[in-house]
Length: 361
Image 1: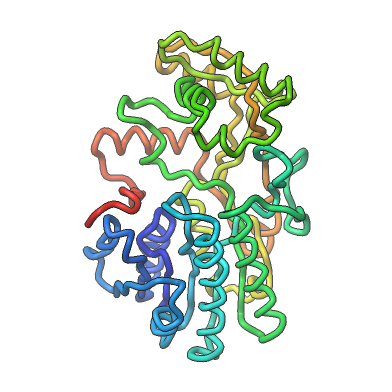
Image 2: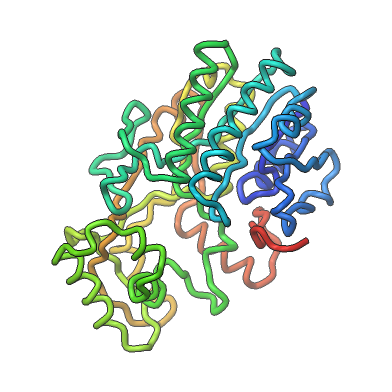
């Protein structure tokens, strides 16, 4: 098949493309011109056609959609120089352009796989990620955060409406937070998400995103947590065993980019995927209470525990995608860390690194 992958040079897209190529397909990679630093990432691979375009422009999208057999719609405004209007235009209206282009220019499409997000489970009234039980696909909250999460949720809604109303062969995959091993370690070879300095920087700067977007800043308990973080920083790097506001260690399920790419491939030919929404994550369930002491021993570093005014206690039920599509995630914390360290040593791995986002060519 000839397959359009929007966002084909992104962290997930590139790793999906190599799997599709290995399966014998040819690829049309749709690339956002402003992401010039990653635009040529797939040039070394035979069977890849790179086209440039903007999801906000119906003609760009229509030309990309025409003549392909299947589409993976991964491209989205994410972690870039976007405001809320741009998030809406790119993620929601861009998805509408994909859907309308299919109806107008490719009505016999074999499959559209839409990249959705765990954001459908995250409540804008809660500062952070919190779900007391693993999230199931039939659960959804009312108010996702603006702009990325809400606008990706709107894209999912549009895709499923076009399936039910117009018969488009749509499948939606709700990704957990995706982790790509080349991004896991900093320049010193330490895992950034577990460093005290990283969290201290987030809450010591009143202009940081964490402080600007945090609700309930005047709550006495929130103030106490921030003051405790500041008091615990002595200028010497250490590890942080992050605790939720209720004192439980952080606990979050991540999707290694390789598991995400593997799961996406399963939706292409299995008719059980049509009209369905699946959680898609990996084997990497990070428990700070277990991981931080292990890292302290591995890197010979001290660690301290502190409550953070940001919830991070979330898991996802993967039973549906395992049962219907045969998905089996392979990459846990040890795999992520081992691959990250191999990349830092300059070794060849089975990961295409993300690269610099929105840089110059």
